[in-house]
Length: 138
Image (cartoon, rainbow, N blue to C red; front, top):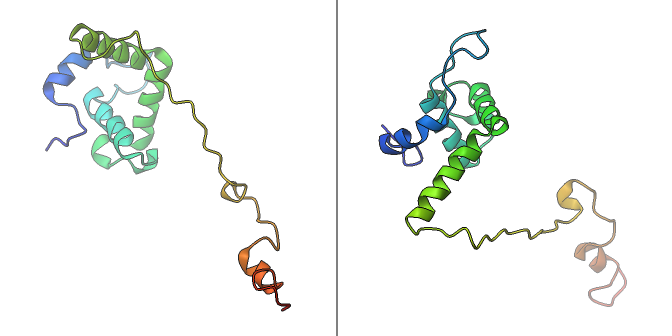
């Protein structure tokens, strides 16, 4: 059963020629696992946001899925896929390359969110205990 985040046969046929040839890497070791299965595992990770170690077994060992993702990042495979997708969308009037928007906003978290301890005596309860909220001494 194909899940909604997995590639359908039409999309697979469109992407497959852009992927490296699935043979022995450097002539050593065992043959590469099936690109289709591992790519669907990568898409599962991107869809769910889960840690790599949580990839379902149906996609193969998590280390293999992660290694393939990283290898394709380093060798430019992902760049080729994205470039082809953007070219296709531009040819069909679905996206224009003359306008690019990048969200570079930063949301700052408190020190406590990063694991730092809170300052003593700054909580509302501590303030009330010292008579700050009611004006009475404790």
